[in-house]
Each structure stands twice: as structure tokens, then as C-alpha cells.
Image 1 (cartoon, helix red, strand yellow):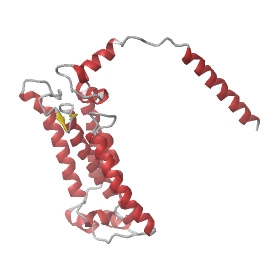
Image 2: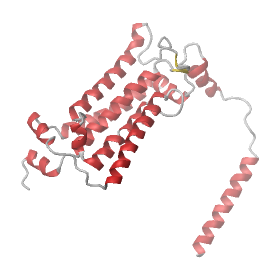
Image 3: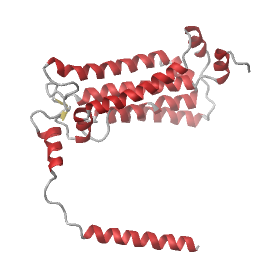
Length: 252
């Protein structure tokens, strides 16, 4: 009881001091020069990204190479995972043999279908509006990957594979995403620009909303690459242990 009273007293004093300090701070009336630079070059400038989401503009344009290497680290990790779980063609086909199971109660499975549909819609919105609001391709792709993970948990991995989403197709989608990122990054070189430089020559608006030059393309392809990359790893991790032991030649 004494500890609780002490905690309440400390919390009250902390909030009181914070309120007092906040009321006596002098508000800044002028914009910091660095802030002016980013605003001018993310939305208002002649060669800016035309994106009201300045963070996305900076990440894909001014910090483009840094973002590229960060993305490369992530995808190298996925390649490493796929390499560790490398299977022959015959083993891959055998790993697909099985029937979807509904080990969870029927209401849980029914709710899973609704949640998966919502995840697909929300993840696409996060990715395709990344040049307008906080979000982007990586965040949207990470959210997208939750959908197949829920299906695996509720119905098993065979439900995905029976409906056409197996490891091979996931890797193909991931490769398309990576190829799209590479082509978007190289396009500026064709017009005497710089590698990964944002290009306002791309369509400026869609349905009245600014596309942010190259940003919408980066977000779209990153969305596909991240979502499919995670899904490929999830499918490998969900192979039943007894099958994997058999593939490795380990006795039960």
C-alpha cells in the first residue's frame, strides 16, 4: 500500500512539473531552417516529391541509398531463411501434401475470414497512401503478411497452398516487387537524373490526390516484396516437424 501511495505521489509531482514547464515555454514563431528545407523539397519545391508526407519523401529521396541498404539487409535475411529451408522439387511437392484443418472452433475460423479481408484492405491503404499519410510500402507489407499468418493458424498452411498461394508463387511476387523497386530507382538515369531521385515526370495526381512522383511506385513494389517475402518464410516455418525430419534424414 505504501508503494502504491508513493507511486501516486511521484506521478502527481511529475505531471505537475510537466504542466508547469509546458505553460512557461516560449512558443517558436519561426520555422527552423532545416524544417524549411524539408518542406520546400518534399512538397512545395519545383523538383520536390509533391508529397505532403515529408517523412516518406525524405526516406525515399534524400535518404534513398540508406533506405536501399536497409531494405537489402531485410531481403538478404529472407534469402538466408529460404536457403536454410531449401528443399528439392520432390520435397516441396511432398510438403504440400495435406488437407486444410480447422482445429480452432468454427466461430474463430469465421471471424478469421472477416479479419483477413480487413487486413488486406487496411494494408493496401497503408501502402498506397504512404505519400499522403504516415505509412508506406514496408509498413503495409508487414501488415499484409499478418493475413496469411492468421490463415495458417486457423486452417493450416495447406489452405493457402490449395488456393494457389504457395512458396514458389510468394517468391515470384517478391521478385516482381524487387524488380519494380530497381526499375523505379534506375529510371532517373534515363533523363539525366540521379539514382533513386524522385521524378515529378510521373503522373502527378490520381483521383485528386498527389502521387508524390516516384513515391507511390516505391510504396507499391515494396508492399508486394515485403508481404510476399514474409509469407514465403511463414509457409516454410509451418511445414510439419515430422515431414521436415524426414527431409533431413533425422529419425523420429
